Length: 159
Length: 426
Image (cartoon, rainbow over all chains, first blue to last red):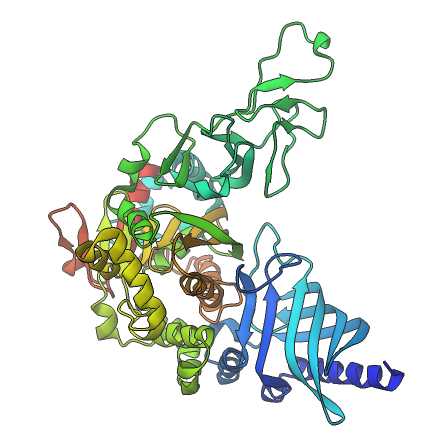
């Protein structure tokens, strides 16, 4: 892995984070391949989304519905809209055939009315090179407290 | 204010939702008396298996004993009170307190402790047992009250929800799978039980996911998960007259079920796809054609076993409400495998839970927001009374002792509060 390629992946992931943080959600969706999956497991080291409950397990079409409803501002959940920041660090990139696997630590801050919440986790992406850029084939976010005893309050914006 | 004055026929005082004193009284008079769901027998199949659960205000261990009987023990050392088990589940031959190593057998009897000679007489303390534990066809409930109706009597008209889930299994049994999803909201526990059978809210609260699904018509021809999600989101978009036709059935004991409202695709009661045809054939083999048809014709959505369980037998899922404070509630969501059915049927259950019940769900997350808004609003003394009499004139008594109301009636809330008042004033 050349430093330049690692850097391109890093810049791409920073771009994804920025699109979410700036609520450019249609542009964010456009980074995903049509057959991509977005997954936030519920169990620690969860093997599969097919035999265990997940916090998020969505196809791109389902993500499109998630984005659509946030943009229409019809949902009481997101009124007023939450503000989020995605912080990425500890990035490593490995080649898997024609795809790359990027892994990073993720800090996620969400402010909504009077309350700010923080989540820490590990994110991973399957990336398909597209010229100088990439398409996301899969994204997975493992939250340290995914299965916390007390359960989670509602989520609106993806990690 | 006297608790008997908090409910008057068709309206409820806001203190029932926001007052910590009322919540404390509920813990004592409802959650230390009623049968509460603790787990399924398939979670503790082998001797020594245990799961850590809540039973009202207390943490308990559901344990399979050496003789395969079930015990429900308080997770609290008889010595200094330490929480003994911190793992959600496991298998053991004995429970050993991490503090001073008092040890107990699977029935909670004290096996030994260090320095027994330090005591003037032999100590006979054991882990406190929950007063009653009973299984209804594999679904295990506990009650902190030594006296009271048995479990089958308590379940009454809603035992049929568990029966129907079992009847839908080609092998006649179900088992837990898929872990457990827990979500929290900062609102009163009763809001969940009321909202689960409130058929006026979907058109408003869930409008955003209805519109979002309508904007993606191609989703109905996509993969199975996307299809199911789109169909579930779209279903909330029925018009008021259609919601009105979804019946509400209220039974003695505060229990209520609502009819189904899923009408198309893989979520419809009458499906025509190959996986479902194979499943139907399995049920015909088990039950015969007539009963199999009757089992599949049971079209209900939420089946509420008051005070804290919501069963969905068609999707083999169960939700358990855990009241934590007047303004804090946790909901546990669990999946069941219809034994003998092929994987596609289990996918349906898992996708139902992921897409409709997760705290990130496009549906459930809006409900959670509304509960929090109600809780905030009810802090205000602008008005003390909440009117819930919509549809009261149309309630119709039935020969089996139940009451039938139309989908847009507030029958369920009235019915739950009538039972609430009985518990709270006795």
